[in-house]
Amino acid sequence: MTPLREDVAQAFAPGGALAQADDRYTEREVQQRMAQEVAAAIDERRALVAEAGTGVGKTFAYLVPTLLSGKRALVSTATKNLQDQLFMRDLPRLRDALQLPVTLALLKGRASYLCLHRLSLARHSAELPDRWAVRTLAKIEVWARATKSGDLAELEGLDERSSVIPLVTSTRENCLGSECPEYRDCHVMKARRDAMAADLVVVNHHLFFADMALRDSGVAELLPSVEVAVFDEAHQLAEAGVQFLGTTLGSAQVIDFARDMLGAGLQHARGLVSWQDMASACDRAARDLRLAAVGALREVRGSLKLRWEERAEQAGFAKALQEIAAACDCAKLGLESVDELAPDFAKLAERAAQFVRQAGLFSGSVTPGRVRWIDLSPHQARLVESPLDIRDALREQMAAAPKAWIFTSATLGDDERLSWFTESAGLDDATTLRVGSPFDYPAHARLYIPTGFPKPNEPGHPGAVATLAARCA
Image (cartoon, rainbow, N blue to C red):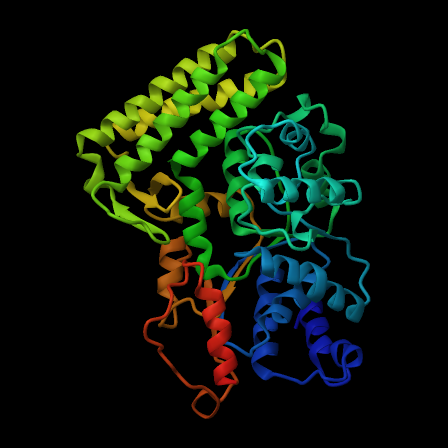
């Protein structure tokens, strides 16, 4: 048994570090088995795919050997909620229990952090839709003076669907980088510096694939080089990768661009270009694209996925794409004529050029080896072209950076090789482990299927679930 595996066994043993730190700790053979397999994968720098049912305690099963290894590590999750849980609760508890001098960092995507430059633009914007948005912006401004992290999750009462959030956060397309007047105080850059200096960084799957894409293009490295990479909620990894590694063109993106262009133009170059006309043309083209995607549908509730062939062959759809390209190309020329006046204009011109390219891509045939579809919601249409799976991308990443790769979730397949997950992720040679749940499901579980229930993507779903849970308790 290696030193790491011995340390792991001692940590989980009766009277060990975990038991001493929490008198509610109970030994679980399945948890220790998984922890030993994770430790072995770390020692041997190989890939492990572990399915661990409810009640196994998989979070501690991968965190304990990862921390005890002393190696720099990355832990990726599917959701911000689990990110926060790991960073704020589980990792500090384990660090204290194991008495390890480990530095931790939490890194989210740009949309999670307040952008000080865009906050200053929003302050003078005429685009706030209603008095609630004005109140929300005022609340954000007060909070902005006190926050150190800039993580909007800190702000109590802020609805993550608020129309104000896109106004005060940046995207890869509209970020000014080192030319931003607020660059020295940038919350995103501070979070990245903290991540580069940390022993363990908690990220999410989307950010992992963002780093993969940017590193491959030579633009930047968002995340530190690590020796251990752990993916919790791995059953959602393929979906996140396919979305990010693909190409998208959304009507909401173009509308946001039109709003940003109008705001920057009126602030920095009023009267020099027909800002209102250009913005209106882009906005109108984007709305026409969504209408073309809606087609004959009378009403759109929640989110729908439409087959590409259902809309692409219609004349109105092709015309809408042409209008997007024409409006954005006109905007690009106007922005380039004043790009020396403010750094915002050069970045806006790049966004316009990208929309022109994307409209051209979706006007042509599907790229070989990829698939297309349309995501349709009440507020936007999003055209997507993505690879069929993440096999090639993940294999390239793993070959370029030999390290321990741990993939875990409660459900990854229905056979010993966990083929549902390993085949789509290109992990044919990975070691697999299935650890059953210690729960007595027949004695403690019931299945109830309600009728007439709101769908998960409808506004009334959370309240209906809460009401039903209260009735069944």
